[in-house]
Length: 562
Image 1 (cartoon, rainbow, N blue to C red):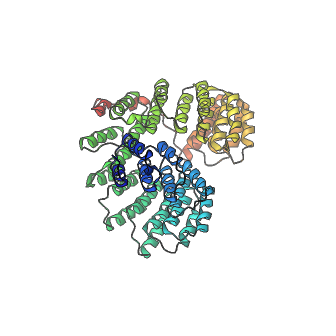
Image 2: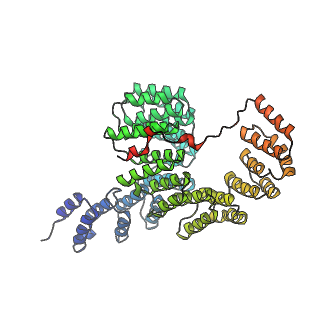
């Protein structure tokens, strides 16, 4: 029986799985419907759905279309821009233009979202030029996307220019600019814009206020945060769960955990957001038992933990460094299926590494079906911190063999691994290889190499490297050299005099200087340094025993798996 076009479209709209979709597509292929735009676009719509679709399958279908319309190009660009593959959205945008199709006011926001995702300022500027040539510069949604794109790339000056040139603005435009300031830590500018927004007669919405509260939290500015809370209440948004979560986080980061708890307790609609914010607040303040207690309460109230909850628990496990605690969370993840998430497994691997179980970390890592640069870097760092530098290097090489390019953090991990294992020549080789990967060494990379040379006793070589640095060395780099001077008295005295001229000096530097002079038997100098610390009211660092973190019977992690 020949199915009509309307029937096929109806079947596509009611489709629930890729298996069903492929059956419908099979029928379309043997009829003329396979070439009709509307059924074809519905087919792609399902394939590009982030929940039930398959992006690779969508791309294979798209590549077989002889003459895709702008609408179909936009569907594909939108799908990739919202995925973990934003660079492919940009590649499609370029391909679209090369084949003679003109982007429209729907294309540009998706492309700009991709520019923001990969923080490509130059590309954002190129898209802006194309927007201007196409006549969409005054389109409110395109202009707002430009503001968000520039802000995400760290170019607030260009974002401000676009904002000022907009002929009309809506709440989304204002929010994009407030969010840009908030993300850059420019709290006073965000506050100024909120005031201007009120003067312009535009009321902020929950996203505007959530961004501003996040900026207050980042700045740990409780005074400004309280003003923002008052504004939220005057706007009648006090019962909004997302804003409640933002307020809880703001008070916690500002050092007022008790106020965070009060806000949490009076929040009427406690979805996962407020629960996650309060759990995160306790984790931030190292109230370990409260983290687990609240997690149990969350489940008892019938609120399903989400990915944010799970990652917060794993962060808590890593901070505690307790293997039993981590294993209990691991059991919960296996029971709920969250252990299949790449980001979750990466964090779980780091939990085992921080707890001293490098073998457990490696087993979790190897079970990952898809390993991104973050997963590889975490495992390289974990092996390095346990003195397994050669294994870390093997993993670094394997990462590149599998087509995953290292980023600046991956190089920090492998350099640190070389440092912990005394692999001087290998460390130098990786440091020199950074430029071939398009990465300029930062202070952190120089610090790793200085630490490596200093640990190996090559003090003069380390000092020469410091003097060749393009930027001024910080206290951390001088500390690395001083740490290696304990058995090199002459170098220690000379460098100690140089470091003593730097300001300000923390207790860590004073401790290192004391060790250097003590190793040379200069006890008068050591006592002078201690007296100087007392005069400047600099407290000595207090060591914390891992035994003090052991769980009490009432805090048993096994309770979370029930």
